Length: 493
Ligand code: HEM
Image 1 (cartoon, rainbow, N blue to C red):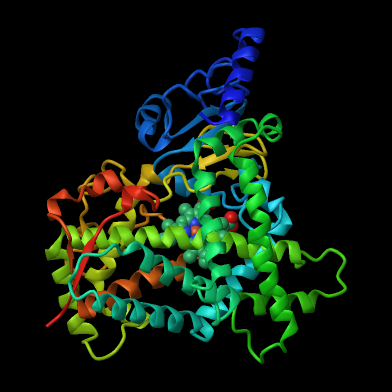
Image 2: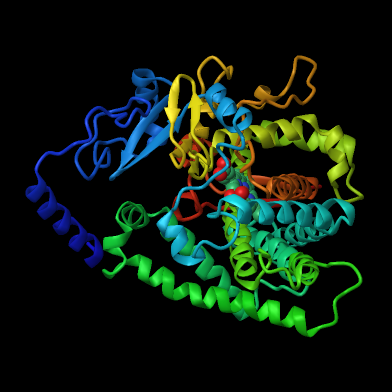
């Protein structure tokens, strides 16, 4: 056991012995929604309620769609089912748009950037980010071209394997990091350059820490643990190198003449900084830029790589699904030109598969925690300002009575009786409302173009028997050994 965890355990034991049983009473406490009875200090931690995406069904049944859990000394309200989620995040969008203080996140962002901020800072950075991504994506199609180029390169590389088994993860990682890196830092970003490689490795290491039990302990007791040794100290040390990498790119952009039209996210931001020059209360300083770029990169790479990996597993496990997608693709696009965003309209089955794989994968089951920005009355409960809220997306993705076969992978969930694609409001892999993922457009574009470009010229097969692929067990898996697999890519005749 690491030293930090051992010291923490000892401290807790002494404190519990010293204080005795001083629980906050019934789960809700303080007039909050009801919930399981918490223990002193630990709250509901250690009561077998983690992971919440497995334990929630019983709690939902016992306490209703809105219940309270105590994460250590702090209450957290959990929302279950698509109705409660939509009501809270859409009908009360403004009141739900805050973020609680997440110590493991604050450790490196120090309150700057988009992911962890609230209020005016968040509003301004969010508006800017959406407009910069839209500008790079839609108006000048920089995004589509970069994704198409990366997808073509990937398909060419996989042709070279000539049907031999290989691990697709490193290539996918390079391709996705290359696309996002080039959108943020410019077309010269090369994920193979040693500084970029270190940046990718350190970003991955931080994300692993952020999801780890060590980070959960740190989030529950930051004041105490901050000064003890542990993984958080390494994350802090490594982040100075992450920041140095980003700052070097900012400096390089400042040294060269500004292009007539922005080529990347840094160009967009530096232009805005110029427009804001002289404003005393501007949010467009360098600290926010570093934190913003850092969070876009970290939030946008692992998620997309994982989804693509899971998609490949689906194609390997279900050759009939793969064949039907290819048939549709041959008819709509053919084999002589690259698939593009506009082909979506003619690919209903492909879209249904991509939407179903995100529902079934359920990659971010509890979104990121929200916080109420004002007192909120929700479904007969009163949530004071500053209440932490977990929108449990998983509860909508597997909701009984909503999906025909919630526990099965079934593209039919997203097709109507005529075979046309139908969007389902109960599927929310990017969350919904004012905090919904700002990278949704890019991620959906990548899923579409990487998948169709590979299918256009390659037949994908698992290296082992398809029955050995247990998709259910791999749901929510983040990239790592559990999602490691080999496949064969055979050039089509
Ligand atoms: C398949 C890929 C992706 C999935 C499943 C995904 C999912 C999510 C989810 C569930 C959230 C939390 C929303 C909430 O708090 O309610 C989120 C937030 C976020 N995502 Fe994504 N995401 C993906 C790709 C991306 C990409 C490509 C980018 C960057 C270009 C990105 C940037 C962000 C940022 C910055 C936030 C925080 C937004 C805020 O706090 O206002 N994500 N994402």
